[in-house]
Length: 405
Ligand code: GLV
Ligand code: MN
Ligand code: MN
Image 1 (spheres, protein in one colour):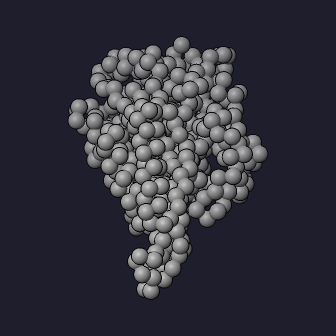
Image 2 (cartoon, protein in one colour):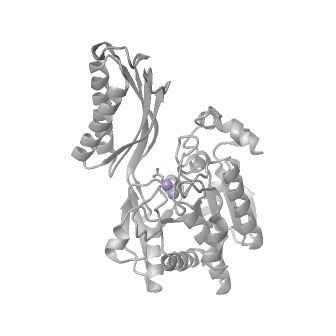
Image 3 (cartoon, helix red, strand yellow):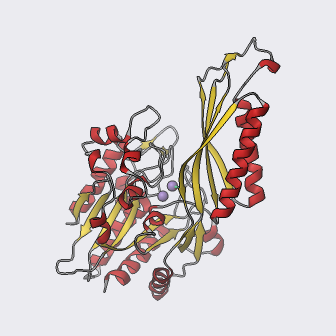
């Protein structure tokens, strides 16, 4: 099937009309619709559809008689709140389209091929990014994962049970991993480097070190209309000061720090908050800069809290070290693309991906498709139709190179 028709078949699922963004949170109705779409695409192509113990979806183009590891491709179907259409789905749709292209050209693989859609890549519901690939590889303990809760207090275990999966099965899957030879994830570019270089497709070099920290400021709730300013212990003030400190410290360290989520409790307009929780997302090219900057931000948070008679607790929720993609695989990708006349610059990225988690277990690589808006994790995220087609051609070329021997 042509890319455009395949893309259009997924597009309405989980779209939130008021913002034009996507709310595809794991183990919800929208997620179930995306999963059903995936299974349907697999079955239409005669691919064997499976869901692993960690909720990741697979569509296998089996290769009877071959003992070689499968070449896997794909990405994820979940989204951040009001995310764009492309982050994740572009990799899954392109994977099915690339298989169609290979078959139309009569390609006969020498080893299995697989399309994957990893679960909860964005951490949009349970807070931990790349949860499906972390579970698959054992980077997170199953008990810790089962206990993760969403904003309404529903645990991952309950959400999976409600969706018909057994959370007792969560955990590392050595057998599945042992059957994989390499993973190539195609993804929308989350920036404008390809536009700047006039290229439709790029190859990932590395992923910056990154992590998430929870900052809990606690103070004392009181009346907004009667409490004198000097008598207040308002946790909102050190929180606000910490957001500004994070920005200054990030600039000094030439890295990135963002507070994109905040919860003030109890959340009354006419009351001083009793507590304010904010989530810090911090990313840097290398770990030492990231660790130094986050330590400075934590120190600033404590100082701001003390100044306002409040308390601050900082807790790391996740951390992913810098990932260098496999140099040999990268070279093979570059060779396959230049043989097709596709010039693909090599780019680093600050965004996290399942390919980054899997990189510690098997050779992984990534292809980026140009994003003319440069925007990601928001409805303005975009890739042009011609570039998406080039992405499919590029992915098919790469899969043919890797699966031909
Ligand atoms: C995922 O897209 C991330 O970089 O957080
Ligand atoms: Mn993302
Ligand atoms: Mn993504």
